[in-house]
Amino acid sequence: MGIHLTTTILDGKAVAEQVLKGCADRVGQIKARSGVTPCLAAVLVGDDPASVTYVRMKGKRCESVGMRSLTVELPGLTTTEQLVERIGKLSEDPAVHGILLQHPVPRTVDERAAFEAIAPHKDVDGVTIHSFGAVSFGLPGFGSCTPAGIMRLLRAYEVEIAGKHAVVIGRSPILGKPMAMMLLAADATVTVCHSKTRDLADVVRLADIVVAAVGRPRFVQGDWVRRGAVVVDAGYNPGNVGDVDFDAAATRASMITPVPGGVGPMTIATLLDQTSIAAARQLNLTDLE
Ligand code: NAP
Image 1 (cartoon, helix red, strand yellow):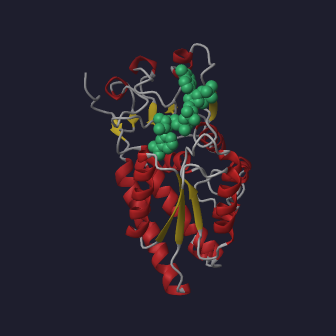
Image 2 (cartoon, rainbow, N blue to C red; image 1 turned 180 degrees about the vertical axis):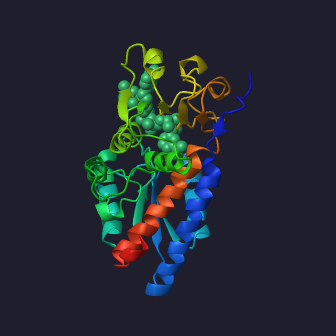
């Protein structure tokens, strides 16, 4: 097997570096003109090791582009009311420009209620109903970072989207659903698949663009991929394994994202970029957006 000679690997790491460079430039200008350092607050409930690692990584990345990172650590037994109150305070704090609630939160917490406590203008992770609605209606708002990062990656490689058939596997509120809306806004014909979809392989075989957002290792098989299709693997499973059988899919795809180094770096870069844009807006430096 092996990668087809004409298969392009969509290098999310390289594109993310470019995004981060633009973000660092914007942060520098914001600081120079307002004296304010943009700040991203990350809220972490409990001590799930993967979440602790993510939040630490995001904090380091924040600082690498010149932004301030604030981590709010709350105990695993925090109630919904306490979390909503804490996030509400961050929403009102003028020194905080973006808020990220690390998810999943413990099962005892109402995650949706906690997300909705994030003020829309600080929802740089694009998780609120307001942000989803705004993006779906083509109005100003922050896109959910993973699908927004995927759109950016596709655009960086000049992937034609208009008129293409895009199949999104997964319909979660932060990934599959906003992905479908963004592809629709870019004039794709979109099919959204989920766990009740019948004959999934046959549906995927019709796709010009496939986005796998399932959460199951190597779920999408090589022979589901139409020759020449663009394959985006949003999956991130233990052991750095994606939702697509990469080796098999790469022999048929025209373009494909690797795991790691594809969608993941774009997600973080989009989060930081949106934080810097949120700061520019809040400081009335809209020409820096
Ligand atoms: P999720 O909330 O668990 O949603 C998974 C979706 O896949 C659901 O809509 C589910 O359908 C669907 N699904 C499950 N089994 C299926 C099957 N057999 N056939 C068809 N569809 C099926 O997961 P998520 O948060 O969207 O994340 C998906 C993946 O992306 C995970 O691997 C996650 O780690 C990764 N991820 C990566 C990033 C990144 O930055 N790279 C960010 C977020 C997530 P139902 O709705 O019917 O249950």
